[in-house]
Amino acid sequence: MIRGAQHNLHIEYSLFQNNWWLAVEDHWIGYYPGSLFSSVSSDPANTTLAGGSDDIRFYGEVFNSETTLTTTDMGSGEFASAGYGRAGYILNMTYRDIHNVSRPYNGVFNDSDSTRYSHEAHLLSGTSRGSYVFLGGPGAGGKVGA
Image 1 (cartoon, one colour):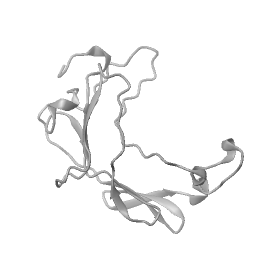
Image 2 (cartoon, helix red, strand yellow):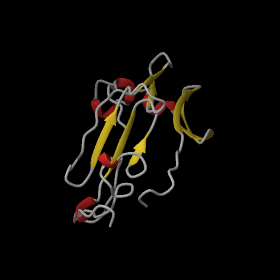
Image 3 (cartoon, helix red, strand yellow):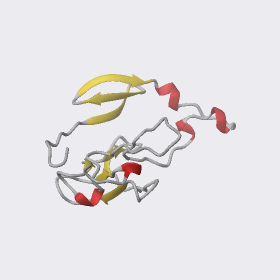
């Protein structure tokens, strides 16, 4: 809904006792066993994230199980340039480094099809929103706000 109520959801992963715990709205709801991320092997097929990860991504996604292009809106269906109150957003994007220090996200974004979806990144903004991004688009239907 365009200009509808905006809702924030706090999601966090944190390494605790060698497991990656997931919290939603400050409630710890489960974890991924650390063993999934701790095996290093000379065979790339048997190496987990412990073998090296140098990429963190924040993104929006619209899923379609059909063979045709989806007409599903991302967010309200407005493109990212519509900004706050119209486009979807992710605020205060951070990650924890290997020393467990929280760092602002300063990575990359891309659009799989900029005629259907877009992003507008404001990394290291220096505002209360921290590193943030607007996301959105109308999908293959191409009609914003339909």
